[in-house]
Amino acid sequence: MSDTISNVRLVSNGQGKRLNVLGDRQRILLTGEDTAGSYALVENYNSPGVSIPLHLHRNEDETFYVVAGEVDFQINGEIVRASAGTTVYLPRNAPHSFTVVGSEPAKMLMMLMPAGLEKYFEELSRLPSEEPPDMEKVFEISARYGIEFLSPPDYAPAV
Image (cartoon, rainbow, N blue to C red; front, side, top):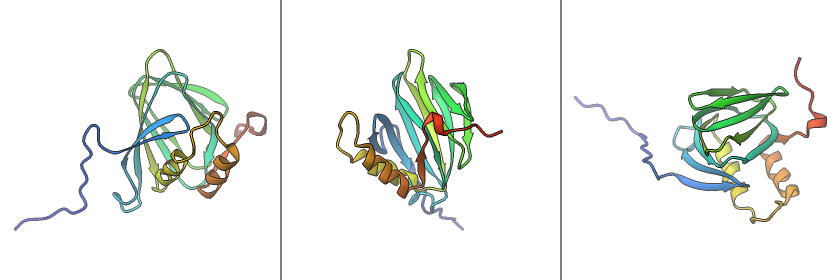
């Protein structure tokens, strides 16, 4: 008797869909199609200074695992340094940002639960590369995916 396991996915080093999402270099490893919608897995690989502004997700939880380098996360108004081996779990509606710090690039694995936000990243990566980006278009796309960008004066840490 033999059992067959269907829908197995193997993504080798160098495979996956590579994206540049407004300066955030990503490689999509697993999509919602691969995991029956339960999660997506994305690799980030960025140089020092790359930063994602303060925002929150209305629809998914996000988990980061720092593989290499150092990353400062802003969570609840505080800066937390995450080095290789650190896991950061961010439930939906938790305001957060991150900045790659130090002198070496940072590599992180990012799990999005449930899946779907990988489509957001793909859509943003198709925007024309201009400095600065067309923020009106970025906000329009973000709103469709339940992403809200927060400016520091409008954000009050949870008590």
